Length: 475
Ligand code: SAH
Ligand code: SF4
Ligand code: F3S
Image (cartoon, rainbow, N blue to C red; front, side):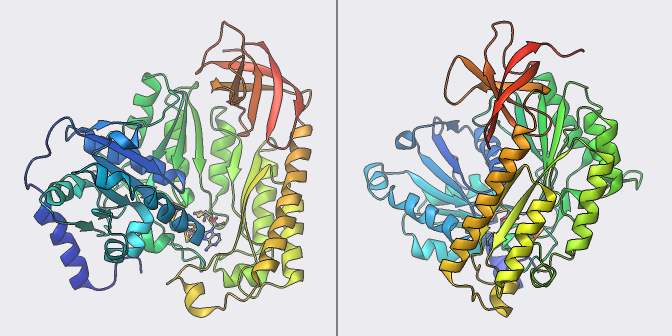
């Protein structure tokens, strides 16, 4: 499924990476600049790439004009995501000729999807490196300095970068992401991820707990465990054959310290178990928030999407959450205008959203991705205007639901982890409550980012709760 085309191509790509490895040394004092697009996993991968580069003597810069190596970690999920990257590359048209020796690399999902085609189409690009090939970047750079364009899009069944200590980029020093698995074995018909990220594999549980413990010791107070489908996390300890499930992992991370908050994303409705819900209930520091993408509320469309659950199953999972975790907020991803979707079927999505009372949703109109099962077998036949109007209805409904959800919080008191200054004012802090809601409140000098405070909510809009600190939470 997920591996690149034919074996010969794979071997050639692998060899290319290997040949370049160990060539001329990277000169010291060079600077890299990295931009990340797409999901949190990409941002997390950039921190792994940064670590690989820094161990080769590269230093980070935030100024693209000063960089010797410019990397774009790209996303392919929708056509627009790829267009954004193409546009960004055009802004380097003048920059690169003015800086001889500067290299431009494309990493991530677009690199994996387009492979050598990207080198042919984008003459500025020197390196194309897929998500499982980041260890070969130093070798590819050395080759590129010798005038050879570098390509490594080999997808691995084993690579988890478990031994690499990520360099925290753009960190607030309070919250961090930890990748617990890579790839995806689901075959949602609309989705390019199984092709760009390869087979699902889970990372060594000990390395995850060690990474979270180190973060806590450094002052971080929240970790988000990342995977395309965290509920199918499964790691077998090679020493004793013991199998660690997602619920087991969640418990181990939660036990590091009661002041370390634990979040996770993304949960798949077909796989989320009661055991995970009970584990959440048993630990105050596992946040009461689940991102549970529904995609559509209609059974025929869910079937065409190959989501492997139906509306009834999804509702049953919601009910389990409501019973086991009455305070839990649920959010979603929704796609408007999937192949052959009728007006009535679209209404089912709206009614599903209404039933679920999502606190928040990410909403998209369907974008056909070349090579996916939907692109091969189904016609992308909902007119663009219809997709747009359905999406607008979905967005309007979610705005109402978010506002209702947030207004119910007025008068309540929440434990909030301070993340930093609010966007609008240096006089205010921002932080999140357990339900992942952004809370903004006036600063009180005794507190700083990384502290927990109790905040009473005075006002709310659809995106933010506003309140004031009332005292510190009981320890
Ligand atoms: N693994 C996660 C989703 C990862 S992609 C899950 O299964 O829920 C994030 C979201 O992008 C998806 O949930 C879906 O809503 C959206 N998406 C993926 N492919 C898309 C496409 N071809 N067109 C529009 N939206 C898409
Ligand atoms: Fe894509 Fe489905 Fe995997 Fe999510 S679970 S990454 S939507 S294939
Ligand atoms: Fe995009 Fe790849 Fe993530 S396609 S959403 S960056 S897994």
